[in-house]
Image (cartoon, rainbow, N blue to C red; front, side):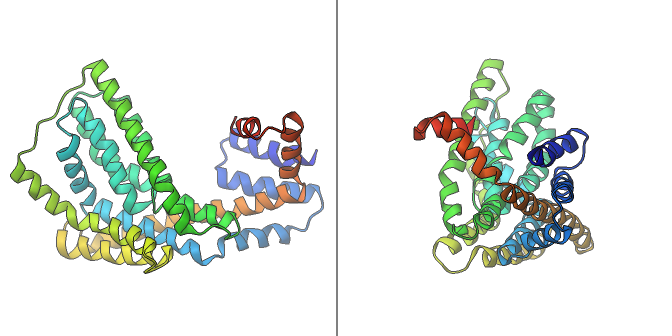
Length: 322
C-alpha cells in the first residue's frame, strides 16, 4: 500500500495535469504523512538536493545559451550549417539537426536549443514548402542532442544523483560519441524522408560567401572549445567552464556582434531565472521522491523481482530497459 501511495499518487497527479516537479513533491509529502514520517525530513532532503556547488553550472550554461540565442548566434550557426548540408535534398531539415548539434555544444539545454533553433528554422522550413508537422518534429528531435552532448545539464544532475562518485567531466566525455551518433542518425532519417517525399533542395553557397559565414560563426563556435577543451585539459571544472562561457558569450554578443540591446538584458535574465527555478525545483523534489523510495526499499524490491525472473545479465538488462 505504501508503494501505491508513492508511485500511484505520482501517476494520478500527472494524469490530472499537475506539473511533474510538483507531482513528485506532493507524492513524497503524501507518502510521508501516510507512514508517519516527519515532513521536516522531506523538506530537508529537498533542500539538500539543491544545495550543491556543481549545480551552479546549470544557470551559467542556460544564460550563455540564452545570450547567444537572442544575440544572433543561432542565426549564424544555422547559416554555417547551410554551408555544409543546405544544398542537399531536404537540406533545411539537415541544417536543423546540424545546427542543433552546434548549439547543443554551447548551451547544453534542450529548452534553449528548441527556442533558438526552432525560432529560426521552423518558419524557414514552412516557407520552403516543408510540412508544418515535419518541421516541428525535426526541431524537437534535434533538440534531444543537448541531453547527451557536453555540456549536458543531465550529466551534471546524474553526477549528483550518483552521489558524486562519477565525475561530470567523465560524463561529458562519455556523451560525445552517443550525441554525435544520434545527430547523424537523425540526419540519415531526414535524408531518407526527403528523398521519399521529394522535399526541395537548397542552393550551393558560393565560396566567398561561405568564408564570410564561417568567419561570422567562428566567435560563437570558440565557446565549444572553451567549454569542452577547458574541461578535458583540466584547466577548469565544469562549473568554472560554465562561468567562463557565460562571460565570453556576453562579450561576443555585446561587443562583436552587437545585435542585442542592453535594455533587453534584464528580460533575458528574468527568463533564465524562471527556467533555472523550474529545473532546481525538479531536482529538489526528485531527491525527496528518491528518499521515500529508498525508505520503502523500492529499488531493492524491483531488483529482487527481476533477478527472480532471470539471473542472466543480458536478460536482466533487457528487462530493465523494457
